Length: 276
Ligand code: DGL
View (cartoon, helix red, strand yellow):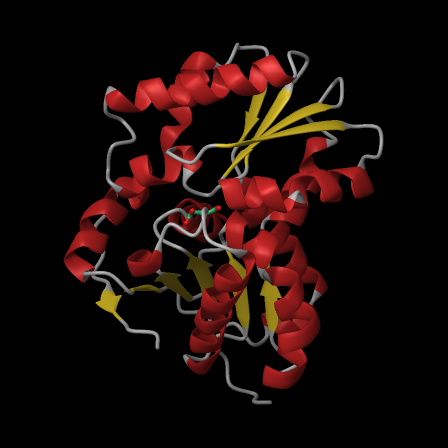
């Protein structure tokens, strides 16, 4: 345990968490942030439970070693496959005064105010959908809701390769939207349950009928973090307040900087790190 303050860590397998960081910084600009994208090992979406857990734990331990007292898993796949084990088992061993939070719970808390008929569609990576984390969380908070999950294996690679606004992406977006709406034609709310997907938002919107709400997680997670910090002064006081953000990637920093600028709409100077 230490009294030192540190940045808020924000972790994703790659670029997707930047959509969360952007909204968190807009809502809570006073804090320092340390973003970590494990781009060299992304995508996580098709990886096994054990591998996603191991990679995520490594990243969390690294961010703790860099002084973070609070880490946000800005990745649904990591939140689905690693968050609970890290919270329940690993934190005790590493440092019980630190915290790791995910993105699934805050999103599910939100849908009750959006859906009119309780039919929820969830787009996510195959890993997130197979884990059934959304189904279970929705069942807990909104027992009468009907959840239909649909995995989109091509969407993260499209984003990671800077193809999200190119004409080729339309084929893959339309195909998955049609399959979800065929599986449950009554869906009135769709969760983009992968932090990469906001980059495909305008294409998704184009193929989803206008009366269906589409939820992106950035603002939801930012609001939930603001609320969490207000309710937990012991954690809030460990977050340094300089208004800065640093970026780390396991890939080539030049490549990260180029694609990250699509997400953030401003330039950054990332550093490369290696995890053993
Ligand atoms: N951005 C991550 C998520 O929210 C997943 C991307 C990946 O497959 O690595 O699920």
